[in-house]
Amino acid sequence: MRHLLKLSDLTREDILSILNLADQLKFERINGVQKDYLKGKKMGLIFQKASTRTRVSFEVGIYELGGYGLFLSSNDLQIGRGEPVQDTARVLSRYLDGIMIRTYSQQEVEDLAKYGSIPVINGLTDYAHPCQVLADLMTIREYKGSFKGLKMAFIGDGNNMANSLTVGAIKTGMSFAIACPKGYEPDAEIMKWAKENGEFTITEDVKEAISGADVVYTDVWASMGQEAERQARAQAFKGYQVNKECMKYAKPDAMVMHCLPAHRGEEITDEAFEEHAKEIFDEAENRLHAQKAVMVKLLK
Ligand code: CP
Ligand code: NVA
Image (tube, rainbow, N blue to C red):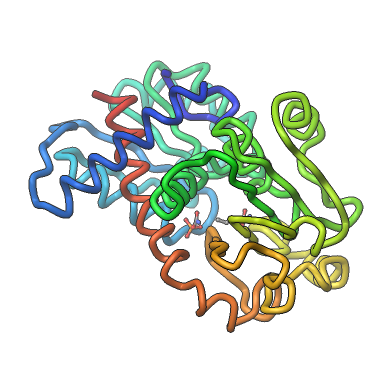
């Protein structure tokens, strides 16, 4: 494993090995026995979109491992003024030991890895959010003990989260069901792969997807970059909401997860959110541990 560009590049063993290391790093942090696994290593953190969790967990994560993180906003970088990613990649490779990038196009992340000579981590594109899903898988295993026999239901937009969750769930042996309106399905190739490699279903019916689920996941109706579509999406996604009513169809001990930020009253009710706040904020915390594990794997 040289980069983390998307989960489909990883084997099941790669994923489990990251999760095991993440558990170990979490234990070491809680017990105050963490070592400087990345002493002196420098990570560039490029952001072309807003972020709370990804930015703070990467900055704190690299610091706790003994390294240094540079926050690089595209507003200030020449990349934001049109310097090609091929050149940026080769320049940054001369200064840094690793790059995390949050941007729009997946191709840009792939190009950064292709033209640079240091590990690249995808911190969210329109296509994928692998760091989030590693933290999600870590959280599911903490709560449920293993992935065996679990059903994950995703309610809402077939976006970057839906794409990466589909891959993560199928690779770890969970079944995956998505309920979304027509025209808002996940990536066609990912769905094809999921059907061939595991148990994947897609429906327009929330109750059908959620029925018997162990994990219920949702995300915003309009992602970053889709602000202009907000109203049309609010119309299209009406009814695609995690609430008390639809949770009746899930298993009684089902978890509710959300990558955050959440829009209460849209994809999830305040009531459902608060009832499951413990899981949701454990999930947010686990971003830190999972990403530290990824950085140790790639940079050490
Ligand atoms: N879930 C997530 O990636 O959050 P941020 O956008 O705050 O980084
Ligand atoms: N789908 C959301 C996820 C945010 C973490 C977005 O891309 O804005």
